Figure 1 (cartoon, rainbow, N blue to C red):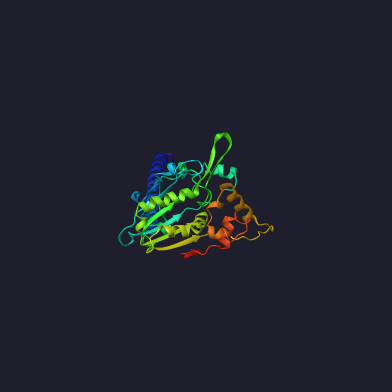
Figure 2 (figure 1 turned 90 degrees about the horizontal axis):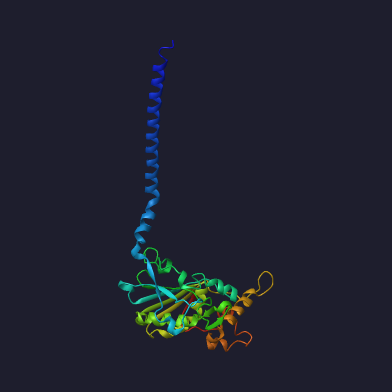
Length: 303
């Protein structure tokens, strides 16, 4: 009875190897089938995205050419910038400008922290970005503005492009609040690049950029030829002067600190300031946005 045992064992081992090979083959086929199905069902948007956002669609950061001469600098003294993608076809003479948001800084400590971020220094800004939303070149996503000249203005002053002062901080370092100069210098550069010939010009921004849009809408209009159609949109840039759940006016106190630190009051619209009490004149953001003390010459929309 012991004689056939080795032969049986040999057959069993052969069967086991063949069975394992079949199972491995089935596993490979099964895995390949699953991957194939996933590719068919899920990869279309990925493929479309890859086609839509090729390396050529990356928009480079343009550093302001005459920033140093004009003193138009970020918080840390670096040169501010913007991203410009040229329009084409029917949109060649139209412009949409979007001001980046990012809150505000109301103290030496908070502004010093920003020096080491893209919100305070161009050294930390991406050199190339994709433009999305209202700045997208994809007609299916952005049918109204896809072929316009599209500009993203980078935010690095901490005061909605309105401050104009320089202060000394510890270790010989400075905090440079030149948002107003940055705004003026970028506008002049864009005018020289074709904005002055715009048929339509749309200024918009989000949060701190929305407030900057509100503040600068009329001055933006003044830069354009009379025949240019100008509109502004303050997106999430409308801030209410109301008590919070603790019963305090925290927003009012915060913005009061921003205005004093960055010496913003002197750059407020004169017709707006003239309607306020002296003690109110520094409450820039609260009174410009929630009380709407300006009568804008051009349509300004809120969202």
